[in-house]
Amino acid sequence: MTVKTVVLFDEVAELAGKDLGYSERREITQDQVNLFADATDDHQWIHTDPEKAADGPFGGPIAHGFLTLSLLIPMWSELFDVSDVKTKVSYGVDKARFTSPVKVGARIRMTVTIAEVSEVSEVSEVKGNGLHLVADATIEIEGEERPAVVARFLNRFYK
Image (cartoon, rainbow, N blue to C red; front, side, top):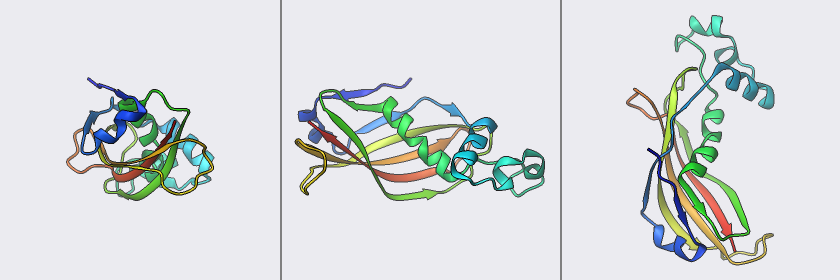
């Protein structure tokens, strides 16, 4: 069962090193893969042609690595929130690796540890006090030993 950590802005700094647990599992569907292919103009057969992909190296179609990575955001929202801020910004990814393919029909979930929290020190377009949060995320595939994605991603919260 997923337990969401919800804190106030002034409590975020105390969370460095905290394991947030696991998101809910979600199934990767062919429709989702096709929509992502349309959105990114990446229609490689290994993603979008189930018949041809069945004879390919993975025995069926796989999700785009960037599709799997993009699901980090909704899974992150299941696990963490800062309740008293005006603005929440996904600031980027310092490091991301696609360590195992995600087959269509597979179920994934994410686990996250908050690695670092610091004040936003540079001038920002966002007005207000800011916190920079670094999170280490692993997106796992149900029944697989190797994770799909390992990423260090960056978030900002402004009061």
